[in-house]
Amino acid sequence: MKRYFLYAGVLLLALSACRKTEVDNLFADSPEGRMADTLAMIRKDLTSAPYGWKAGLQTGLKGGYGFYFQFTEDNKVKMVGDFSTTTGSTLKESTYRVSPTGVASLIFDTYNHISLLQDPVPDVAGGTAGQGFRSDVEFSYQGKRGDSLFFTGKKYSLPLVLIKATNTEQQAYQSSGLNTFSAGFANAYNNNYVFSYALDAQANKLAVEVDYASKAIKFSYVDATGEVTSSKTSPYYYTTTDLSLVRPLFVPFAGKVIKAISYAGTKVNLIFTDGSSQEILNNGTPLYNIESVFAYNKAFKKLVSGATIPGVTANVHIFDQVRSLFTASSRNITSMYFGFTNSTTAIFYIAYTSGTSSFVASATYEYRRQGNSIFFKRVGIDGGNNWNTRAVQVAPVNDLFGAGDEREFTIAWTSSSSNTIKFPIGAIKSVANPNNMLYGRLGQ
Image (tube, rainbow, N blue to C red):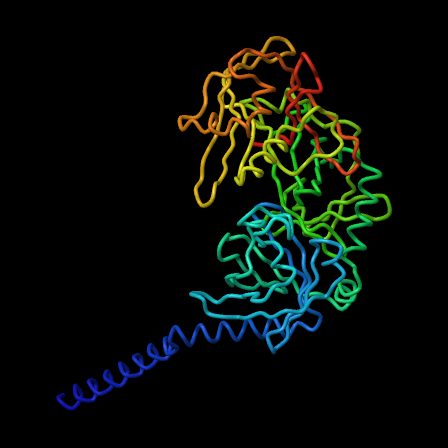
């Protein structure tokens, strides 16, 4: 019996030793070793794609941008991008690194087409002083799926997606295919569409509003009564075959998911993730009535300041003029809008920076509706008195809305003579002089 227990004990010790060895082997690699393996895998993926990568990047201030990358093992990368016709036709070489910066990261470490998006000098690429377009050149690796690699910007946490290119796509990118497609799309869309939309089987409409200046597309779901039930804005970028929505900001519609827009001849089509397509239709006027969508309790509560809207007949583009006056005073506007806060009050809101400090200047208005008219009266300014200290910069707002007297306006659509403007333009027009107005895109 003693001998039996002795053998059993030896066997248990042997099994324990085996189990311990198995556990030790499971975690044999150190964190450094696992990081090294991940970096090696990323480098291999980047450099082994025979025809390079097509890529889409989202920025914080100006939509999406498309690129073609070809990485080599000696840390060189050649690229074209859709920032301009020059970057679309010039294959620029620079360097890159795959490095451990807390996490496995892809870093574009010399100036190139992608660097333009973060250039802090406005005269270089048209970005905001000190921020550019709020884009990155250092990206954290998130993973891979199928033929795609996923990264996230380290500072602004916005996506960069790389998709393996085909031989045909490589040849197109390297022969100004980005420029060829973007020009062809603009010709088809601008000359054949005013306000575009798609229909589902229940006759619900999806308004499709391409904004070239902000490189984004607004999709608004419009029900059979003409009400906007919801909307979604997706940044887009050009490839050699379509306007691709930045993943993961694809848009559901009619039981499918929209990933891109393309054209064939004079027809423009939605492209779905399942490979199918649907032709979009054209309307000569906005698909919804402004009174039904622009109010404190409707889909859109704001007129927002964005890129300059050409072709509008108005005495002053107030948003543009205010921005110019702030810039002339060495201040930078980060956000500006006019919005309804509730059923009786509205606000003109300006967030801006001076040096490294941030400020807000705002004015509050009481309003009342009477028939087709709306009356505004300024009743307050922000507690910090910045509205008064920035009196020169906000003068165009005071000229239109007054500084305490009640003034009469109407809310209506206004139009642009430019065929590049493919979205409704909301306006608050002075009754005394309809060419005195505040106008812009509708926002939430």
